[in-house]
Length: 331
Image (tube, rainbow, N blue to C red; front, side):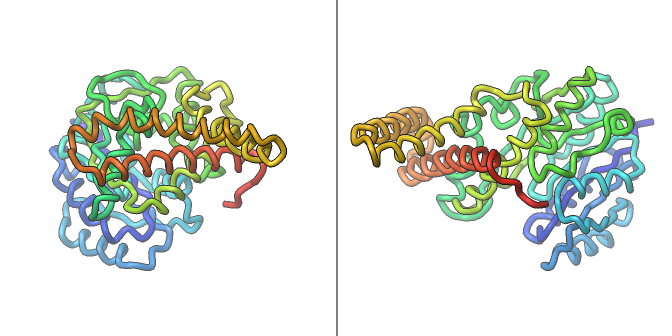
């Protein structure tokens, strides 16, 4: 008999996507009667809850439950849903993600084979809105210049990795290492994976496990997202300082270096030349890295848009990381 599965989804004002997420879960190749869906809602004030309720009537054989998340933060939503769940396997999903029909099946297969303590797969990143800028952001979010060596954004080869998006776990794992850290407003999944590895476990990337993920639709939303990622990355690193990667250190060092050069240029004129030179070198390297994408898409607007999006990602992440050194953000 296959394992019973609880799919947990943090949610807040997701009327645009939540119906499609539930549809995708209801159409899994895994038996519906062995699944339950727990949506931890942080007090949505749009039509999110009404849409979920309509899906409860549309799919009477699929247990769909709405869990209150009064703290309105993602790790608290995950923990609330885990406590209320009944499944032997816990699969984290996102309200911005549409899982492939075999998503649950492959997650269960990998966990049943005891390949790793956490398994996950490939993000197929989609534009979060219409228009060329939204498409540019989605392309930037899956480009190595934008995301470094995060295999789950572009790789087609299975491997043991540091992290995967969302994740699937056996229930007893939470009894061994605890729930998600509610002090972190972002990077809570990466921190959880570090605890898995610290306790001798593994994280496995299986590219057969695919999810369509909707990127942010505007540059301002992208900037806020990556600023939060940078800010909370440092908070996570305070717990696991040895997990820092060179690629993660580059954006804050670069941002700090430019800031110091700009300040010093007020007193030493030739520092401004170095400042401008570094910016031009950064832009040149970035443009050279994006040329293959331009040859593929053949759209100058996307070439410009991807450039702007990657610059936004780098500087927002680096600025958030630096701000985290000097400032504590309230939950």
